Image (cartoon, rainbow, N blue to C red; front, side, top):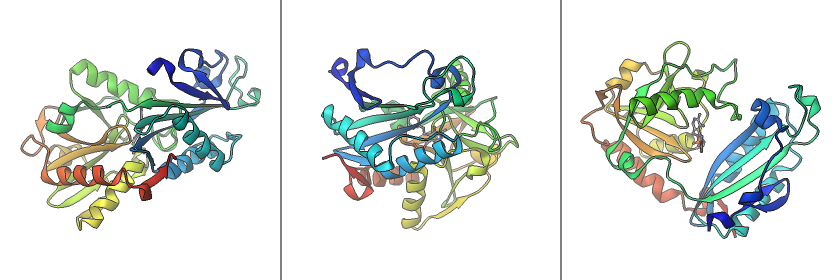
Length: 296
Ligand code: PXG
């Protein structure tokens, strides 16, 4: 089944084994490109318009003209899902600067490469992390600041996150947490982070270099609807260690409780009641056609 998946490359559908890009593509040579990770649940692509808006925002910042309108891009995503008969899927949308030469000047690239991969859903965090909570560490590598290759731009430069992930892997924990240059908590490697303390739910501001996550946004709205106090504010590592609850949010991760940070147990070491309530609510809304775009 997976070998038969069709991949969209520049308007054509190719079998997975034939879906290739040039070794002169600047996405490969220089990480010069952008992407989105999107999910479909039961035939509804969750927040597709928001992901497309963010993609075009990233493109605007890196001065990359995507040769499709937003509407055409949405149609291309839906068509790829339909071709593959997928209703529950992970979607990777990549736009690179395209084929150039060995110099980095983007003017050498005349046409962006557009890739849409759709895949049956894969779990980013195992069910054990979801049920019992993830173990984490604070990584040595600092999140790129907003005046550098910030993660606000969802670019193909993910080495900053990969360095943190490597450290988590080597230490045998589930996930890494990055701080900003000042030392405030920023985010996970591909997830935003929240803490709960005495009924206040807080998450770091985008000024720490965190991605303005689409899941983060929706979870903040959910928490407000549930009448919790919600704050976007700087969080210190000490506050993280002493939070009642900590959790990650992200497209692939959804909501994942955190039970340990650098061997400090969070709360009573189990997913907390507010995290569990938000997980239940989030699971309920993702299939709602009002929350996204229907495939059919
Ligand atoms: N921070 C970073 C650095 C991310 O890359 C998030 C936060 C969460 O944002 P959303 O909008 O998804 O709530 C991300 C998301 C992947 C993958 O396969 C990465 C992301 C999303 C989906 C898949 O690596 N990053």
